[in-house]
Image 1 (cartoon, one colour):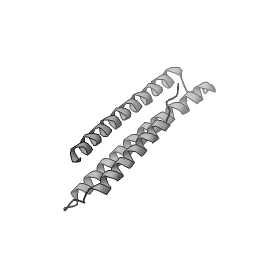
Image 2: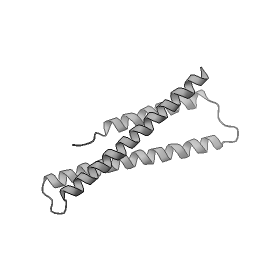
Image 3: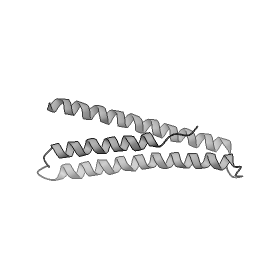
Image 4: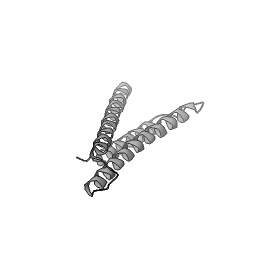
Length: 111
């Protein structure tokens, strides 16, 4: 079973659009520290999403290598890598859900 990467891309696009909406509706911080913090968080989030994507691609590549009979790939390695990719994806999905929930709560406070 392969883990689709499209939902991950969709989640990233949703988060980027929400961040753009939030940035457009708020005034910049007077001391500039808010922008540095947001940039640090955004880069950390992007790095995490990239790692999840890379783990999924590696797992799919290893599964393909096993399917074609590569001698250095064992079934247990494939299964472990697929489970790692799945756990990473589920973690990323839960983080996205929490971010969306927090964003919605903040937007309700401003209304």
